[in-house]
Picture 1 (tube, one colour):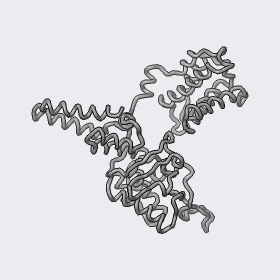
Picture 2 (cartoon, one colour):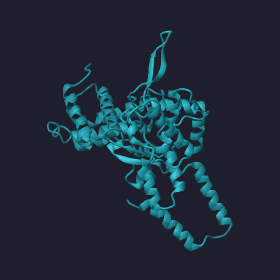
Picture 3 (cartoon, one colour):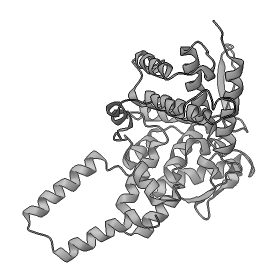
Picture 4 (cartoon, helix red, strand yellow):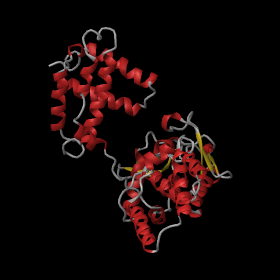
Length: 367
């Protein structure tokens, strides 16, 4: 059985280049597409794409539904199936317009890479996102040890993400010069920092407490004043390890290099939350925490727009749609307040109209 098809490899390389260079997709997205194509080729025994028939798509969907996740051992979720099939559908739609394939493929055949309407609703249903409260994150910070420079780095790392809402990939690549303690801001420069969609923007410290800000300030000062590190040195350096007396690798401190990926940051979070007796929340979940705080603090559309920009969002609706879910506890409080309001009598109509207009303004302001 062939392990690859030369014709397929050439056209796949062309498509992946198109996604990266023309469509400007991230490396992770391109990798996901490549994995989906590899899975389909394996299923068809690497048959040439020119010989594609819609029956292959139908068979692949059936086999995909029977596959097990390598991580959990359970069957693939509808969301995973939906994403995989979407990658294949877009590929074959693109392929149907390429020289050498136009006469072989029907554009409409790509639609067979679709789940049923019911399965699609299940796959795309929005589920409540779990995230920690401000108090829980502060509890974690209070439990983290500070005896060594590695421990102080880890505590400052958690505090910094709560203070700025920066994504873990950006934090892993950030340098000392990007933090301005006087302005209480972080310049996320896409030329050097791995920001989403390579956008550059300034984030001002969120109002999450002086004790959180102080942890970050003390860490920056330690790097600059005690270690004499410069502007281009990493804000959160990688851990240095070396063979110990028993020939096992041991942590020896920090090395003047960036982490190669964001994986160690997630490891720090997991260890810190578990040590505090709390369930694990990943670094990205703190962005949800900050959005919820913004919903409570911001009283005008302009204020929420500024809060949204601080997270790197150009549009307010991006913040509301991606992170604006009302937490169940807050939902309960709002409904209970409405019950109490009904018991105390009707609200003044003009006041009610003003409140509705204010909330509508939050959604519609600036797009």
